[in-house]
Image (cartoon, rainbow, N blue to C red; front, side):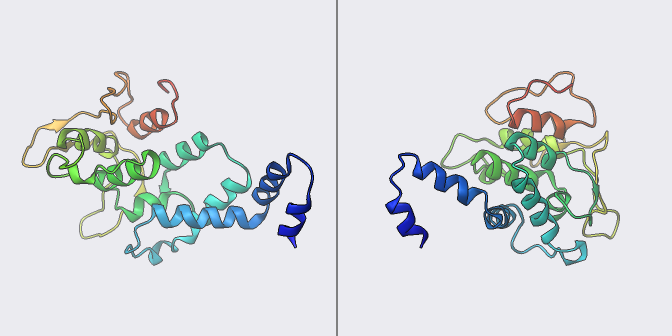
Length: 208
């Protein structure tokens, strides 16, 4: 079959040709979307009331089929807004109830490969991350809609112009700061913290 054809192919670029063939098949996009969905959504989250996780998986699959550049995909995901139950990337925020600390731990792990959740309540025991680093990074997600009284989940994934986070056992709000010490843009819009974070993630200049 394909293995024998590949081994018998005398062309020096046969490996590159095979890779292009495999990447062009529909099952590559579906498999990659499944992998991303399993990484992004908590395994214990009850998402059936929001249509399940397939809306996100289908959205991801479409992006991979279209060969969407990574920076654009990340920006669309991090800045997504709308009804909590609509198909697409908003369910990522819904699954974590728009909680700044949950979103901070998840996005740093997914997009940076950095595990900072141990700095949630105390300085990281094995790494250089401090509580201050964690909560200043979480502040980028502080100005998002919260669940209404008596509700477990949010109905809307939207930015607001109010909301802050504080260090544990403190009432003093902290300002946003990127992981590694880079300061947030001084002219960051009041309701555009996620936009600034997406720009930093993708290496863009100040988006304002």
